[in-house]
Length: 363
Image (cartoon, rainbow, N blue to C red):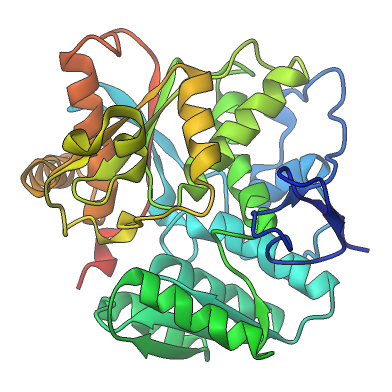
């Protein structure tokens, strides 16, 4: 039995919908209570990846949809004075595997036999791979300009890519139109709360590594913000349960020219510019825009727009430090340096930056 979903805007509940009748994104109606005392981090079975936190997930997901994702390594990045998590070691080389496994697992529980999604690349590869693992057909709408490395993963998994000319919004529109015509279960990483259930495990892992202490700050790339919001939800839940004493300040790094959170907080001028290098976060209208703003404000964080030149400079420095990532990842360490320059983040603070995808996908 899958868990019920609820609309935070109108209060309606649903057995399963990809969005509410009122148009708002849904969340789980209830989450299982965490025990009063957290587990000893040494007892967590890291071989299970994020499924080491299965009891904290909002529903009993089907274990067939896993490839050992989660518990990615966390290492020092001295060039940027922070810790980084290496999401590129995930099965399809990006953090999207965290949400893909839980979303496909929910689909399995519902008896779904065909998935449909839209993606600029990483989510497409993840969903196609996990659908193959679960034995479910999959069709993914992608931009006509999608990078070949990401498209190869979709095709290799047996999924059907549908190329769409035009903007990223045009890709979504084409996919939603197909879903409206009955062409499959919409497995959107932006809309499905099951996806955020998976990305929330990133926060659990970060806190567990610190013996249930939250870092001072997290800086992450934000398009739809699925990892950012997973971290927000995960850290809030840990604090509410008394497992940690705080929620870290959350800083959203966006691509200049496509930075709606920055624009909402600081005006259009602060969001202006160009950064077509960070193609993975060029989302002009994030589905959960209001929640992104709440997360930034309530955590005491901020949002910054990073231009192409700054991104590429940070990307080169990451590579010279042995961290070969895709350009979208580099906006976060670049943003961290700006935050330090203006004194928003102190030199001795514990900061974690997720490096969200592999440089091997950039060709």
